[in-house]
Image (cartoon, rainbow, N blue to C red; front, side, top):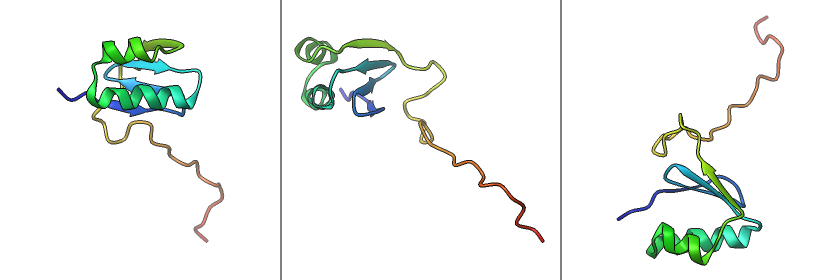
Amino acid sequence: MTITTIRKSDTEVQVEQTLYTFAAKEQADAFQQCLVNGSVEGCHSNHPPVSMRPARPDERIDDPNRDSTISPSLGGDTAM
């Protein structure tokens, strides 16, 4: 079974619809690496997070635009 993960930040890993937060990047790395061959329950037990919470309910994990950043306009009118 494939487990879908999204690395949200150095210390946050989203697994399916749950966001796991760790105290350090190394702990998040170890948890994410554990998920390659392990179960969520086993990795959670071996690499306990500081906290966990539901991910945003409106965000789909297969959305190619998730967490994308749109740069604001620098302002000004380029038409002369």
